[in-house]
Amino acid sequence: MASDVGGSDLGDRIEALQRRLSRTWQLLQGSTLDIRPFRPEEDGPLASFTVPEDEREIDRYWVNAPYAYIAITYDDVESEHRYYAVEPELDAFERDLLDRVVDDIRDPLLYREGTGKTDEETLRSELETLLEGYGVEAGMDTFHALAYYLYRDFRGYGKVDPLLNDRHIEDVSCDGYDLPIFVYHDEYTDIETNVSFGQEALDSYVIRLAQQSGRHVSVGDPIVETTLPDGSRAELALGEEVTPRGSAFTIRQYAEDPFTPVDLVEYGTFSVEQMAYFWLCIEHNKSLIFAGGTASGKTTSMNAVSMFVPPRAKVLSIEDTRELSLYHDNWLSAVTRERRYEGTDIDMYDLLRSALRHRPEYIIVGEVRGEEAITLFQAMNTGHTTFSTMHADSIETVINRLENEPINVPRAMVQSLDMLSVQTLTRSADERVRRAKTIGEIGGIDQRTGELDYSSAFEWVPDSDTFQRNDSSLLEEIADERGWSRSELLHEVRRRERFLELLSALGIDDYRAFTALVNEYYADPDRVMDNLDERAAAAEDVDAEALADDGDAAVGDPAVDAADR
Image (cartoon, rainbow, N blue to C red; front, side, top):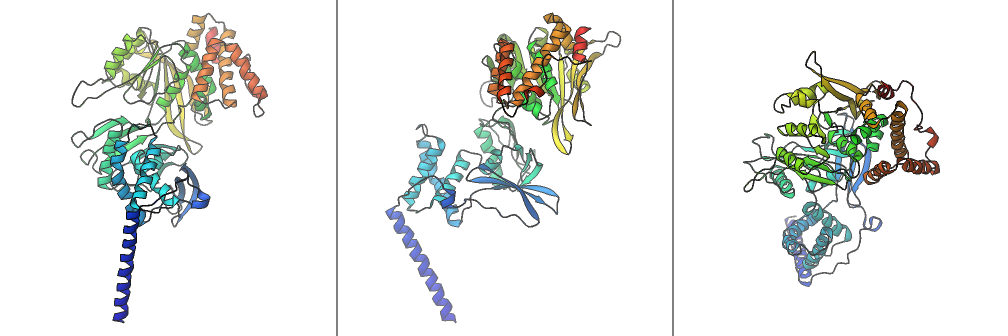
């Protein structure tokens, strides 16, 4: 028995020696790879997923075909959803090979910077060269799996890359070492993922995110707010001093293309009537603040209604981190700057003072929260139209925050603000939705009480998930400025509502196409409406007759009544 065991061990050692000799001979000889695109039907799937026990799969979709996909399961025991990022599988040999390639590919990548090739082409070319040099006869499944991980780790966002490629994800949140990352999914809301980081890996990852966005983070300066190269907004924390559970990060994703007013109407955030109201007010230089809690859609809404700005008007935007995206020719974008070792910091206040020297007609400020507010309201008083956002959950709270520390805008200046839109992230019909809770209009100071008057032009009715229209003093002002009669104001409001309804019915929600049509409307509204009516009549799936007629009068319409008084 002992001799049999000894003979078996000897045979294993001889076989292992033969494999090493064979590998050495291959390395000396080299190899030639015939690289071609990955063919799933021939090469087989790169990734596979087995549903865990007590869970059932309810959704699956690609985020980077044919390499990575997402599987959503439901745990019947815990009564919660789970999110699985599924990537190409590597065996032990392929993992060792990937580690070696990562070490050997760094210098060639630095040398070949600026060759004009795309990042992916460069990585694939270097990978092919290295594998041939190693003498590895790699199949296409191995080659493409290695290429995926190289691109993911060198040019993408590492383990979080599948999550950031998922257009259903709004937020990605890592709370510390060895803790599962959570995401906010537009269908399944907050959901736990199968992605996590150990201590060393997470510290390195946070530092890498800061470096990718051109910022510095360290134990001595552990908190950084920044914008990643893809436009996502990131909040980073390094180490355990300020976040005891370990380094942490939250990444807020934004759509590649900004939402248009048509999108927000279709999502139910606003009604067509509200958007037509915004359009008319913005054209006539009414200043506006969007207020609400975190993730209520303030910046998204401000960016969307900014598409109503007249085409040749000069627009200047000021932000801490870049979030706004306008399709406007005469737009100057400014971002604050922090300097660690040389130069000076440039904050919102500095940028706003500089902005006034550029003589903009419209000023868009990312968020009002400090001393820059005084300058912003001074700009309102001197004829500049301003849009901004702030954290508040009601009209009263907005006014209170503006008048008190640390903003301290005098009440006499607050009344130069025309409109307030208060948004909320809430639940309706068992779904998390964003709604414009109220759109208010700021009046003058009550001479009897000394308080600031305000009224509500629109209110959200939660029970029916509809919007109620009230009297509008701003529309009355606009009618007076333009010399419009009651019927003329009604005609213009209805025509703009129909414009938005036609765009929605025709599926025109691209921000470039939307802005171009708004610009055409400013030039010749009758021609644009005729063209849209013709397109709607020719479209098989659009019931043009069902859309509101721009000449129909609405009995008891508060907007019309206000213009008549």
